[in-house]
Each structure stands twice: as C-alpha cells, then as structure tokens.
Image (cartoon, each protein chain N blue to C red):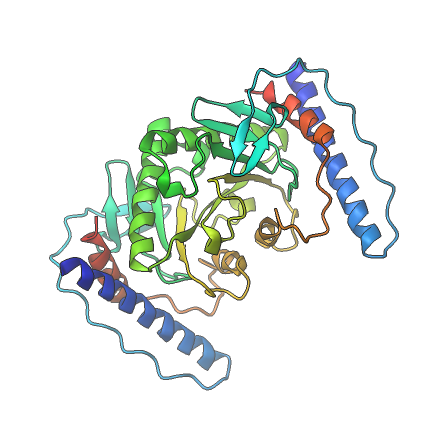
Length: 196
Length: 196
C-alpha cells in the first residue's frame, strides 16, 4: 500500500509540475494557457536523514536526494525534460567520468541500475535513456559528472531523439522553462525515497 | 613511435571513411560528389588473438574488436556518426542494462573509461558523449546492451545535440549512409588495439 501510494504520488507530482510548466510556456508564447493542474500535496513522509550533497558549484539540499550510497547520490531535477528524469552523481566533485576511480565507477553505475529499475516501475515502462555529457564540447552544463536517467514512454517525443534537444536545454539559463519549486522537488524525492 | 603511428593511422582511416561516405551521400542527393579520399593502407599489425563476439544477432569478427576483458568487449563501428564513435558491450547477450550483474556493470563501465581515454587521446579532445539507448522506446536498435562512446570536437555538429539525431539513424536500414568496409574497420581496430 505504501509503495502503491508512493508510485501514485510521484507520478502525479511530476505530471502536475510538467503541466504547470507547459502552461507557463504557452502563456509566454502568447497562446491561450490551459488551466494548470493542481499541485498535489506533499506526501507526509518522515523527514530525511540524507545530509545533502554538492553538485558542482551547487549545494543540493537533502530534501532533493532520494537515494545514496557512500560514494554516489541520486537527486530529483529542477527542470526534468520527461517525467521521472533524474540524475545520479558521484559524491566526490569530479569533472570528468575518466576522473573517477574504479570503485566510484562501479558504484555509480550500479546505483544507476537501481534508480533505473525504480523509475521504470514508477513510469510503467521498460525503456530508458542513460547519458553522460562528459565535458563542455559534449554539452556538459554542470562541471560534475552526472548520469541522466530518463524513463521513456511511447510518444513522449515526436521523434525519439528529440529528448536530447531537451537535454541540451536542460540547465540553460535562457530557456523558457520554469524551474520547479522546492516543494515540488521535495514531494517527488520523498515519494521515491521509500522505493529503495 | 609505434603509438604515434597508431594514432595517425586511426585518424586517417576514419577520416577517409567519413569522406567516402559523405561523397556517396552527396552523389545520391544529386549534388556533385567530391573526389573521395584514398583509403589508407591497413596497418601491418600482427593478426589478433581476439576470438570474436556476439552482438545481439550479429557475429562480430575478431578483426573488429580492439579491446576486451573477460566480460566486456569494445568494437569499431559499421556506421560511425563521428570519427572515433565506438561501442562497448557486455560479452553476455543481455538486452537491458538492468539485466547485468553488479560485476558486469562495473567491468563494462571501467572498460568504457579506458576506451574513452584512448579515443580522446586519438582525437585530441577532452569531451565525449556516453549513452545507452536502453530498450526500444529509447531508440535501441540492436537488442544487446551497448554503450556508445563518441569523442566530441568543436563544431562537429551544427548544434551540439545533433549528434543524437545521427545516433538515432545509426543502424537504420533505410538511411543513405554507406556502411564501412571490413578492411576499413579492421584497419581502425588494428591501430586502436595497440593503445591498450
């Protein structure tokens, strides 16, 4: 029951956020904005014991971290490009994937697999895009290794790989996408945390 | 000297293949085709002891494998979308990343790091795109886990993430790109093999 509720909450939280974002985008583009979906209430999960983490120059509060190991953490996303788009990072601030130790590499990707299993269950799919933009010429925006995990659904983009156009804009300062609120991100992280 | 020669050979082999491919594409599109670059002679590397591998339904000859471990192998590419676009796969035929064991995951990605270091050295860059299209809805074309490793260079695509449009077409049967010849692939693999 707890798990079913968590899945429902994660889905509705992210969908509401995406609906709200699209409504803002449509309003900005001068078209009539649809009525935004109501933001679901945050789950009443107990407060996290996660100590927070550093993501490049950014301090990530513990409320946005939903899974971690001694060398890896997984966080929800300020600007997800699909529902369930999350990030998995080494705890140590390393710019390049090739800067990681063998142990960090193994732990990072085992954690990606664990996160991917949960996200595919939540979003009822068996496909995901996994990607590292490793270095500025590959589109890296935050100078800290991060694996993008994106559950993929039928028809989520007009062309399959439009997902990457969105990834490119993911952290762009000049895009039109409204960042999610701290409360929205906390709700998603709380719901995901209980699934590990 | 041997290493420098290997680097030069890999670069020229792949560039020739790409120039040839572009010439075929231009000819097909009705424009005047530039004179194709001459295919460089294969390096006189000793024949490989690599036993070949299975990539989904495809038998990969040992001549196309340039690095391997007991559970992972790295192969050159029938249709690279940028110079140095190679693949790293688990030896066991597994459809999904989440089907791999912890040991296979660690070995796969440690091998990716080793391959990435070599390819960035060969192509004189510090940026790479690393991606798994994990499942059909993510654009997976061969039902066997494979990590795309693409060294990225300044200006290699008009927009950074056009690389993914090319990835989407990578194994498409109906695209206009000519597959490389066995000889071209062998030359590249021979040159890369000595760098590990």
